Image (cartoon, rainbow, N blue to C red):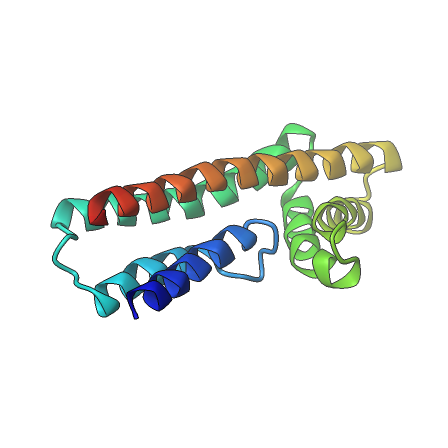
Length: 160
């Protein structure tokens, strides 16, 4: 059963990393779920208060990084709150409308439409803001992947 348990934990971690590209998958919940499953399947004994403190701080950092990267990407290129909301909605809807490429096209189109409709920006400015949203998303994915890899690595160092 040990092998089956480790496979389940690994699947949880893999889904967590897939969630970086598909924001409808709550990636951090799968990472934490894998850690908690280890405790249920084996033991919570290896997890000290330091371990949990670091993991919780990293979870907070993940949420902060996600929000800030998108906001900076849109704001740096002159976007407004409407652009941020449009980008976020596009990020969620995009992968369902256009599989694979929707993850990049969605925030781009969402930010452009929001700026054109709600802020009456000219098309060139809206395009720049759309590019900013894509840059923000890519920055967010890179940052979150590093944080999640650290979380999983720290977990593995703790239990192995």
